[in-house]
Length: 369
Image 1 (tube, rainbow, N blue to C red):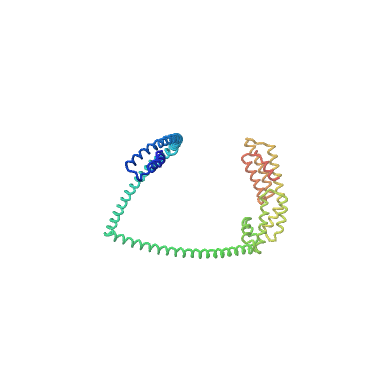
Image 2 (cartoon, rainbow, N blue to C red):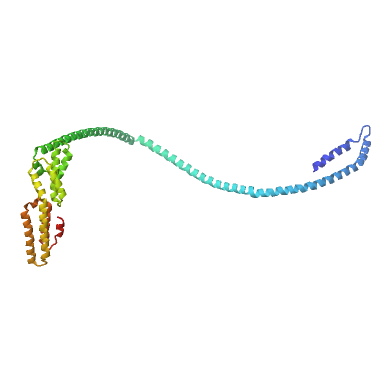
């Protein structure tokens, strides 16, 4: 505001001083004229100044109110900024500073500890270097060098032994292979000799001798071994037929199987006493079976007619009758031993009836029917 007043008053003052000419007038007169002029113009200037001051005062009042409002706004904004940004930022900075200071303190402590440990380790390394230097100066170094030489020598010996061992293993493998080849060759040779011997045994022996020396299992086994031989194959086939037919005598009588067995035997071309006898047994199997059925039926009828219970006398009498009936059957059909199935039933009857003559034998009858 003062700057504005100065800018307004400066031209007026200059005009007051410059508006009065002084040339050709004495100094005293000049001064008198100046005062008079000043008095005349001073009132005008004062009036202008008063008006100007009034204007400036009004302008200042208006401007001051706007300025006050603006300052209030800025004050509010500043307070808001202080609360929302600056103060939290200061708090955050303060907390970060405290945290960082704590972390830096911890890190500094760790660094100090590490520096201390490093110093101690360096000291120990220096001590060890001194000890190593001292050791190299005393007889231990000589002993160590001697031991190293011995170790090198042992390593060389071990390497040599390993090489020898590998050579030995290779030789053993080669010998094993040779032995396996020889064994295989000997096995093949032995097998060939056995096969030849087996073939000769079947070719050169009589059919009855082969029956005596063989079983159904041995024949089936030899068929797998030498069954492809054209000379032995028919012999083995006929032996198998013989034993299959003979097996029927150990089983329950079956008319269809018996008829088929007779057909099989008639296809055997070998001359044999055993074969002829087997044919007779097969032809008579029905007769022997039927007669044993009749004998057992008689014994069952006896059980119904006579009950011995615990009477020893009746037990003996009844047992004698039973044994007499069985004896008559075995006498009349003395070749019953050629029929294992029938012989087993006869023996079972005797086994049951001897301790108790009343023992039931109807189940044995069902085995024949």
